[in-house]
Image 1 (tube, rainbow, N blue to C red):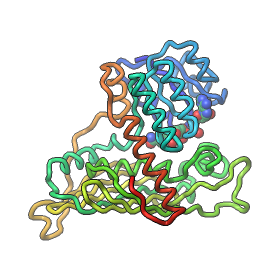
Image 2 (cartoon, protein in one colour; image 1 turned 90 degrees about the vertical axis):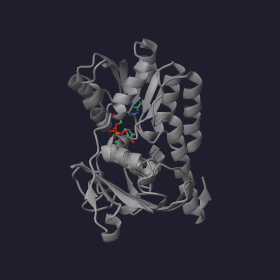
Image 3 (cartoon, rainbow, N blue to C red; image 1 turned 60 degrees about the vertical axis):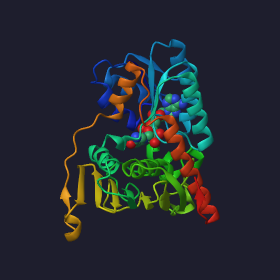
Image 4 (cartoon, rainbow, N blue to C red; image 1 turned 90 degrees about the horizontal axis):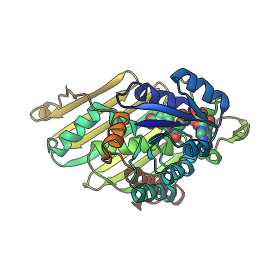
Length: 347
Ligand SMILES: NC(=O)c1ccc[n+]([C@@H]2O[C@H](COP(=O)([O-])OP(=O)(O)OC[C@H]3O[C@@H](n4cnc5c(N)ncnc54)[C@H](O)[C@@H]3O)[C@@H](O)[C@H]2O)c1
């Protein structure tokens, strides 16, 4: 697979740590509208072809697939152009800023017959995959209750840099720059984590969103800091279970932590993922009586990057595809309406 990297920021570097060493994959070109960032990135990864616009890269055309690692609002126009050029696309999450755009991308990719995948990264967490297998095998019995959280603290800690001065954080705080806040940024991850782990779909949603005042006047330079930075959500799942999901950038003491608890009639599971690693614990069988929890082993899983490359090479569509991400985007769009109207909505 000859791969083009579109957008050469923080996440692109993360992706290249995988793609750069993969058998059968050659990273042949990079695109960024920021000349300096493009040069640093292409020099670091030894990429020969460099473009300041996607149009120039498409005119050159000597690539099979692209990974779209641009800011959220750029995903739609650039992915549509890539699909029109017949290229396979791995797109970063969220697929688009809203459901109509995400659906348009989905339909275009399906009509063109190109491989389309969204980088819901936490599918790479082995304990999540193991939990889903156990739910599907009926080991927990009927699922009654689900709890999931995604906790970050970059608004209170400088561990990842300073949001007051760095564009990679500032665009995430501003709806005018295409951000849908913590809900769109990591809400999409935790909704996928919860629904995928519990092996069900989301049926009804009610959310509360909050944007805290961060600086006097609420604005830094061109960035109006108006995107939500904490949310709480109650959900009904298609399997009948009730759920609570929440996320915040104000979770002091948690750099990046996802947690999922799935409670069934015969047993329960807890998946945890932090920068230091992931684990799975369960309370099952006779242990339910004494509420004893035990570690559960999870076999390594293939990453999204490997599965995208395999899909391009085999022609078989991988999961999670654009349609799945568009459906999650619909939940996010509805969540914003529920905040305004203060009533639950059906997905
Ligand atoms: N899957 C994950 O876990 C995960 C983690 C972090 C970020 N992301 C996603 O990755 C995407 C990028 O995030 P980031 O943190 O790397 O942002 P970033 O701001 O660090 O990098 C984005 C890059 O895209 C470039 N760019 C902007 N417009 C462009 C255009 N039209 N053509 C080409 N390049 C363009 C910018 O100059 C910048 O270098 C976002 O959608 C984000 O949500 C996903």
